[in-house]
Image 1 (cartoon, rainbow, N blue to C red):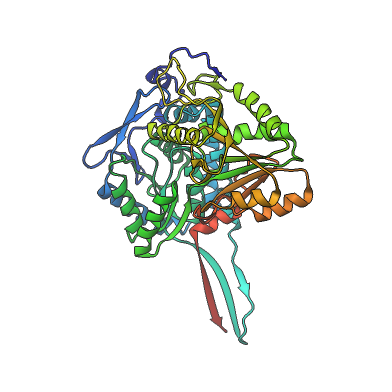
Image 2: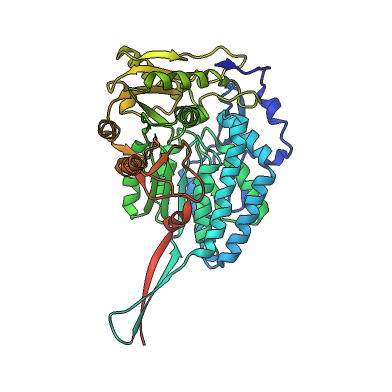
Length: 502
């Protein structure tokens, strides 16, 4: 691998390069107004590529969140009565504004998440696609007429918005994780209170500015920022406030379990998109060049910080060495650097704690006999961020930590396997099941393995599985519910039956 041509990146200098400076907001957005926390407390947000201060945002507590919930509850009374066409029109305006301001949104996203600017531009388009899609889906929320078993009666089925939704999003996709949830909720006729990750609040606030311009009414969209210290109390308010009828969360499995338990106190509906441990299988009949190319993106996109990235790579023993050589050659072509350097293809990790986890897993893997083929250290750069080189391990056995732990970082262990039955059994041993991938040109094997993998999403001969039209979600301890697709809007709807006697 190489280091990008890093002229010294100065966070505040890059921040000043926004074409529309009003997209960089430093207040929370509640009831259509930009506000501070009641206590006036703030917390610092840093650029993970330099560790420099990017800005400060309000540190809101449970009482601030309660006010936001009250605003959303008031707005729901009117918003639920709007027509699907009205909701679709305003959502389309929002999506168009996102695309129009793609470059500024991407720069904000890169500054707070470290993501390479090319990836950030892609995420903005991806985020806008959910707003556009769900605006269209609003007009396709259909009911039913059910044949009644009784003479002289009719049964009608209709769908209605569930109410106020509490939404908690992660730091790895600061824009798309919000629009995938909020787009569905608003299209359904719900109102929302969003708590974005404390590492990446500025993207959420920029989206609020554009939503405001698009004409989304006051109280329909509310975003409250909070520090790591206030997060537990904010989460408790969102999961126990009786005015909230739906909670949607993307994050770790332990936190998802806690939020589900808290939500049960008022029997809220929940959607949970939780941790994964995605297998990536390369069979002996696979196109090895295609598999190696797709694995680069599937493993090292966003420095390995995606819930669906390949966590365990299994390669048939007959093609193991050839595949490793092809893959390592591609890893060497990656360029490590600050996300705003146009030459960068591999940026920093978002947090120091994530970097330390990667180092810990690497240390334990080497102790278990794994061999570092490339990477394995923090690089020396002209910026002082949370960087770790993309790392490939061979001589890997099932005793390494990645066999049962999600990495969420740029560590790629490559295992050997002998038979189809063996590898399917090994990859299914884990308690989670979000995504899985495999490469094969045997049509019979394609169906056998796709059906046998205990995951919610499968990529066959591809490392890319997510779009606005495809349902996103997992099985086992990877969560419940689906996002995106025609199924995503149903997560924010109640089904009501009406029995009529004529």
